[in-house]
Image 1 (cartoon, one colour):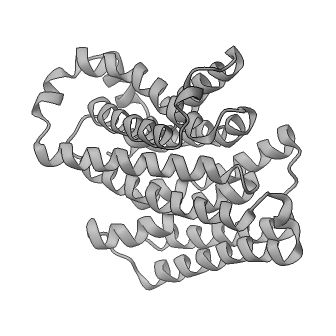
Image 2: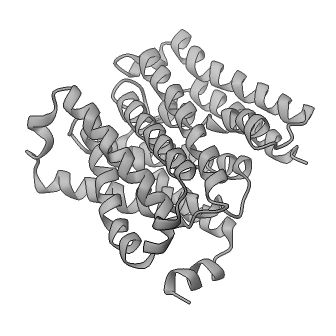
Length: 301
């Protein structure tokens, strides 16, 4: 048994998810520290993550890659594109709205996961779960519109635009989780994430070239490269990769709801490190979102 297999066997899935929550909570802060364009931050985060995993996939999981069916490979490719869209829209949203609003909105993805799980994965959605989803949607509305009415949301350059991008990122993240839950039942972790991350990196590179960022792809100080590497190691390896590992053992709705710890962690880090104090509407709306998703999770059969 390999070291990775022994580690998987000894790690409780919920403990793995706890590690992933801590890891992904650092993402928004690292993004804010970096002065590179949003698409470049997203690109190098995924590129470095892929480069760390690809040698393992090629040397230790060669047979798994060969056995990957055409259908599963196609789904993994589409998943990689969805992940690229998630990163591109979310990273860009952080340029226009606050960390608290962006992270909480992008983590509304459990709402979309619950609907997709019922339609695509045949997971049951009870009335109480539906009520929880509606509560969470109301919380998102309070957080997005309430802050604007109070004037607090104007702390961002274009808060409504940034919030909209974060919601698009949430939909893309939901597709990523649902596909992961399906494929991880029959595809090993390392081959799966390597294919997904590689496709994601290529898609982000295409977006960067399309935006005319080609000249700025390499002209960065050592500090920036360390930030890119930090995004890959923390949110990439210990965050998304651990989440994909847990999807084999834990239902998609549970995984997506558990990840709601990210807005809490990111908001606390933003308060301490960036001095971003969340306004009352953001706090209230975020609390309602969390409460709604808590009700959804507790109401699962």
